[in-house]
Image (tube, rainbow, N blue to C red; front, side, top):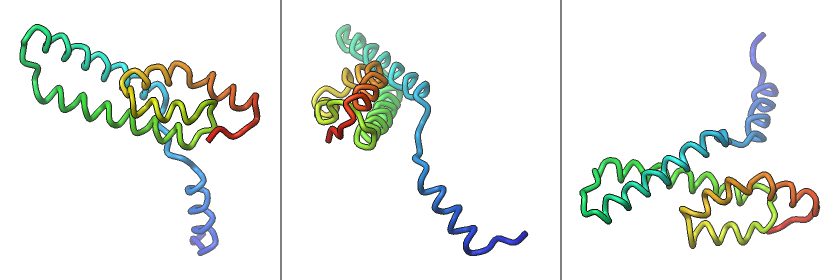
Length: 119
């Protein structure tokens, strides 16, 4: 059956409705990897040992991807105290990423139970 213009438009509409979401297990793995590499780099710097630049660059890239995904999620998802979490992502990014991942389900549940918009 050949594609008609209507079916292509319908498929486009269906694709526009779906958000691109990475699995939260992957975000957890990347966030923990980034935190561990950050702590290893900190230990290396305290002991005056040179940390490989390629690993440092990789860590920065991984952290930026995780941070960006979570900022987009905070902006697009209805969560409790959304402004607080967004400001925290800019003030204390490494700590906030882990705490947000821990509190994520609870924040969504609170927003649903209050049935309000927190923007």
